[in-house]
Image (cartoon, rainbow, N blue to C red; front, top):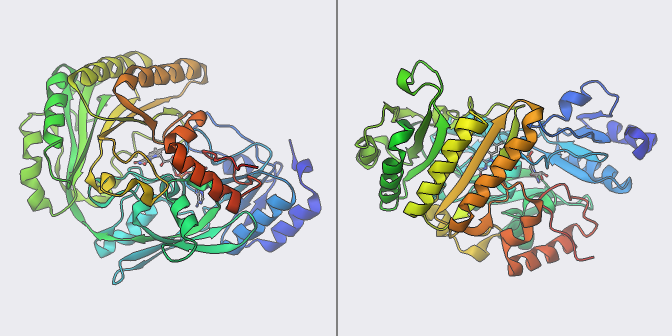
Length: 465
Ligand SMILES: Cc1cc2nc3c(=O)[nH]c(=O)nc-3n(C[C@H](O)[C@H](O)[C@H](O)COP(=O)(O)OP(=O)(O)OC[C@H]3O[C@@H](n4cnc5c(N)ncnc54)[C@H](O)[C@@H]3O)c2cc1C
């Protein structure tokens, strides 16, 4: 496929209009520019518009619409199912829309639609401020926020999208709209959980909260033989703990690193990772019960929030092959724990040693927001089951993805039946992810803002027409 899908004059006009760059299939840097986080995704857009401003995005959207090209929008490129790149369409790359402008007095961060969470934290932490954001620094604010967004501090402060005050959105017809509680409220409702269906968000204004620069956070490890006892104790503990405590547990293979006790190297282990969202001194007593579970490695300690936000980066490098899923659990019974540990241990031992089979405890920050307040749904779940499978060899694709699907099926009896759309690999679960009533409302919104489904490279809400 080449530029033949789009007339050359239009390409030229777009390039003339853009402060950023236009790259076609034969252009320098094309292969680098179409790469996304998941190495399994190999798509070839007809055109890549590397936008540097809102005006650039308007020009790219107009060009795509006029030439009948579907649009893929890329912020961090972390969509594991590859929703930030397309074949034969227009890729709008927002990496150049990357300013973060912090107003510490008003506690607002005006954030470009292409910003990554590491950049956001670097801009806000010097002011001792933050908003809940990605747990890996290279994840983008764009897909994360429009899909909901669970960060470590969501147990206290809600989803990232709950902290959105206002947004600038370029719609399918090329208009630039403000969406907030006071302006285009329907659009504001939809972009908080409805994904990239309604337009390209070129600016997010986030509410900021005090936190850091030092937080009490870290990771602890136990040999897998102790996991049945430790996960039960963790469940009993987190269900009584204050919302300031935000944790997840994971079955992993302990890495052969100097800081890991040698007897754990290369063996399945149970990790608990988390932080206290508040004053580290006040957190010490809250975290104490975890320490009393006598981990073989205990790295819970005061540390910079930005260090903790980067803790999982080495385990999640770009370019590997990935399978993610995210299924809500309504509780964590002893039976659920047993199935989880058996299947997760088998996966890390025999399928991929790079896997992290996670269960996050969700918190009142998320559940206390009314379900109808935003498009995001299924706030009532207590836990999120989140297998992350990573591997290098393309010959392994089928076996690894089958293993990931098998994990989902094994935990299904303990699930609510719903999935987190930012993690789910199943494109046919969009309607279920919202429920009938909300989906109907989202379709009406799609009819209003994108009736031709220009923005369809996403967890797609299909317009009625
Ligand atoms: C390593 C890793 C760690 C992760 N950690 C977390 C986590 O801690 N919590 C969590 O909730 N999720 C997490 N995720 C999942 C993450 O929320 C989604 O993958 C999300 O889509 C990533 O955002 P992005 O901007 O990088 O996405 P992209 O891949 O760039 O885009 C994904 C989708 O969002 C749309 N989109 C992107 N930017 C915009 C924009 N500005 N305006 C409109 N639409 C846009 C795109 O059209 C596309 O459909 C993680 C994913 C990975 C790979």
